[in-house]
Length: 272
Image (cartoon, rainbow, N blue to C red):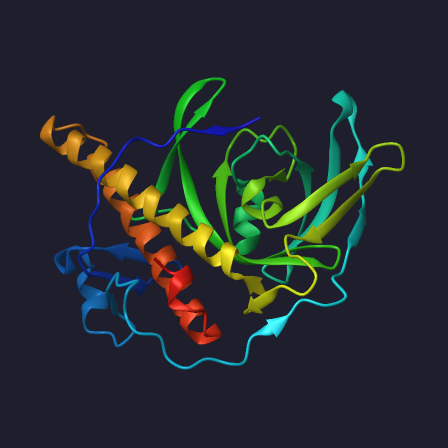
């Protein structure tokens, strides 16, 4: 069971930069001088501005939820009354994860990370995580897709942990939170249905409440972690830079969410 412990932090809306290294991993910073020299001349360096109030471009016609699917997947029971389920990560990597609603996000083993092409370095964002053995810094990534049966979610936060005890990892709430989940322990089945009501208006396959809640989540995390980073800098704490990298990570997540919302034509009332 993994419980995430975020340190407190304050608002920061300045621009920031992203670039992709030779391993295909994306990095973020709010100081361009931190970008390694070999990447400064490349065209793939991007500048982002955190501007949720920016005018939206005309988007596609919204959908209306109809004939909502209910996905039923097979589970395998293991010792302790827990259940394992097969998943597909980024459309190609298969993994066997334990269903864990007590984990705030998907947690993966280092072996699965290697199959995904994840390469940790000094610029990898890390989340302070409370485990049974104390506080550890969990390397973070974003899965483009995670599929369980026919149920799929995009842009799923995931962390990597060395202590998976022979498992591929945990299927946590960064995926399960996108669905209404029902467990049938007798039949070893899990049902996943969308958090959508029949007839509800959808933008990009999601209702307005989903976009609004996801935006608030990222904004809250940025503010909390920024405050913690500021306090650490005042006290010259050696982990202050780790939190700054985490702020950049969540700013990029928020920026990507806003870009997706604009493409989907989400009304501005859901983006404040």
